[in-house]
Image (cartoon, rainbow, N blue to C red; front, side, top):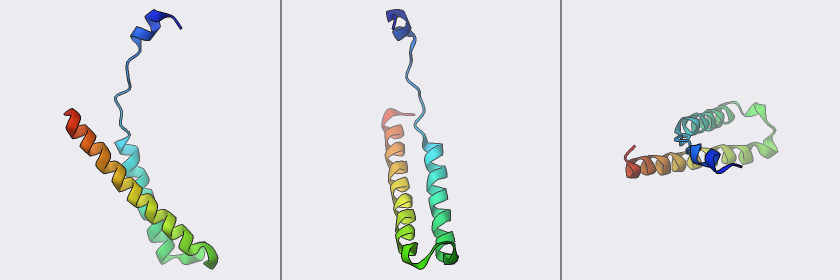
Length: 76
């Protein structure tokens, strides 16, 4: 790669917070569906999938907190 091309590159200023909101919401929606409509999956794996969706929510909320703290620290 030419040295001039490297100077032209700038970092992307996107932190993905919108995607994180959407993913956390979808995990929450999946949790509600699995709790109120357990017929979508068989009885043996129902508890596993509910735990997976709850962990998706928890990790999404942790990620939102991290991104918001980073934004605040950087003054964005």
